[in-house]
Image (cartoon, rainbow over all chains, first blue to last red; front, side, top):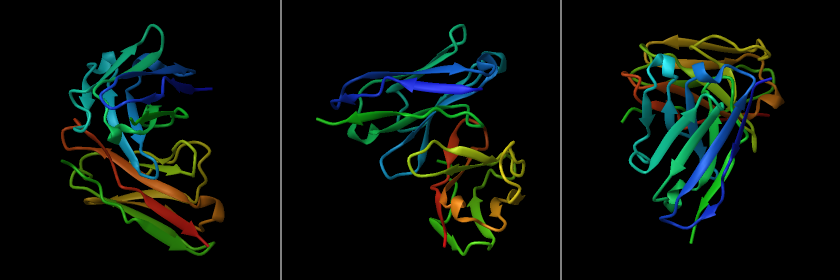
Length: 115
Length: 108
């Protein structure tokens, strides 16, 4: 059975940094286009970043609000996806989901940015 | 920036047909996907590539496309279908993933 498990969410002060991890299992991770999607409390889904599979070119794209502050990366040998978040702002407070943007979603990890 | 537009809410009685629309300029070129999200849970894919239904999704869920609008139809909506529904697609160049604002479906 396919599974995505996020970790790394925490309470962090504005301007701080955090690294989220996502462990994948049960499907062909190296051929999957992987994304991070977030959901602020009481709000809708917001796409954050996408990493296409290496076999499809490995292109990386970011949403405008996080470009230049967040970095998505992947380790296909370990079936891991990462999100390095720097210069965090209060508006980055959300549950962060790891997803293939198709069938597979993680349970989410909560990031709270507050002083 | 590219946007997908959904109505904020749709309300139907049990057994009625619920239709949720999603509009965007690039939809004639790019597929749309629909997710169901119940409170406190992760999203679940209910329609992909405009009109295909994943395994284990009930047949009452269907999708269609016409021009710049895609529609999620729930035929004979049930109380268990109450949830938020989101469409997603990409911009014209596939550089940007976009979600619609979400539609709260009420069945009562």
